[in-house]
Length: 120
Image (cartoon, rainbow, N blue to C red; front, side, top):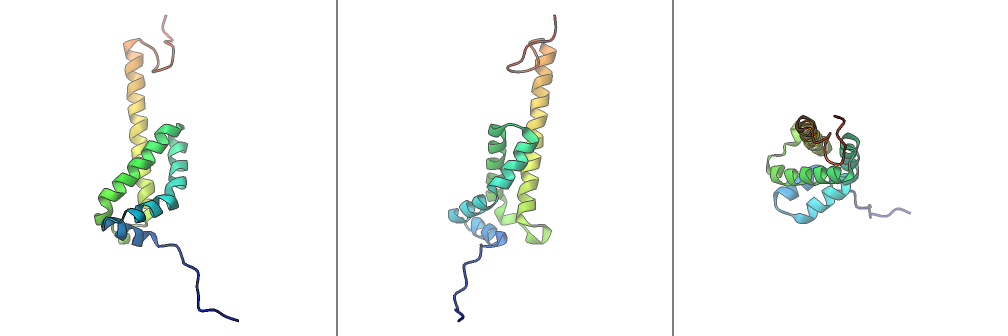
């Protein structure tokens, strides 16, 4: 016996981006539910800090909303686009950390927040 009913397939990411560009909040929730975990894992692997990783992923989704109208599927797929945003932002966070730690060391206060100076 066959039925004409087919299960609902997941909405393609490109369609979600089109809907986000039209201002549909539910589409953003669906996109986030689909990719949030993987993007968090990537951010955490780079940053090794759960708060920073969460913040970076949130910023990537905000950037995706702002750039939804310009998203061009011919230039790449949505997961790669989102991953690029997360990696760029994570690198920015690492660079900021490095600069802050260098400033702490130069000032003689220590090696950064929560650390002791190694100078005598």
